[in-house]
Image (cartoon, rainbow, N blue to C red; front, side, top):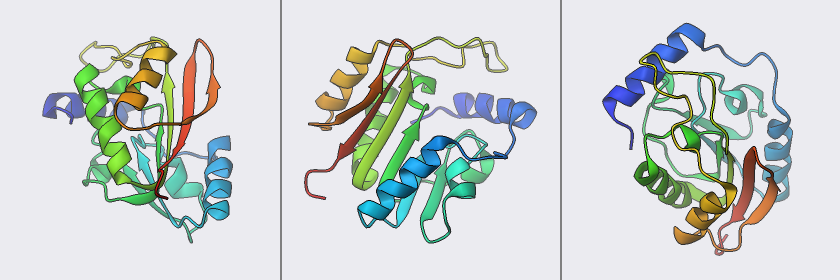
Amino acid sequence: MISAYHAEQYQLYFEKNGKLADKPSPLVDFVEELCRKNDMHSVLDYGSGFARQFELFLPKDIRVQSYDPGVPSCEKRPEPADMVVCNHMLEHVEGLGEAADIIEQLIKLAGKYVYIAVSLESSTKLLPDGTPWHTVVMPAKWWMNQFEAYGMHDFEIQYTNDKEVVVLWRKPDA
């Protein structure tokens, strides 16, 4: 779902700018609490980037897979997990078709929950070849229509404004 060229651009970017997280984000606490409340023991951080915050900061009894084709140590094909977290990744895909494919994949990989946060803004960051860091910049309504169209019915909107949309979806059979 990512071309070799696009993956290489992210690899080059992360080689120059990437670093492991030195502190957890507030999302780590949210994910841990959701896992505890819903008997979930595995998390897939889909689009982890170089920082790999869930892998580094969730308790060890919650198994974490960090997946990111732009990070050589995280490019192994992801396996299903109780919860899939896609935090600010969808805006980085190459095009609208890839965004749809990834939404479908997130649904297939999730055992119980999918958490998605997507930026609605352009970024000043550029990849090494000069292409924008955020390649798919669409309004919140467009993203929510995509989630619905590809099977994420009755998702819960956690947060939305003109900068980002954040949704949480529980699989109906979970």
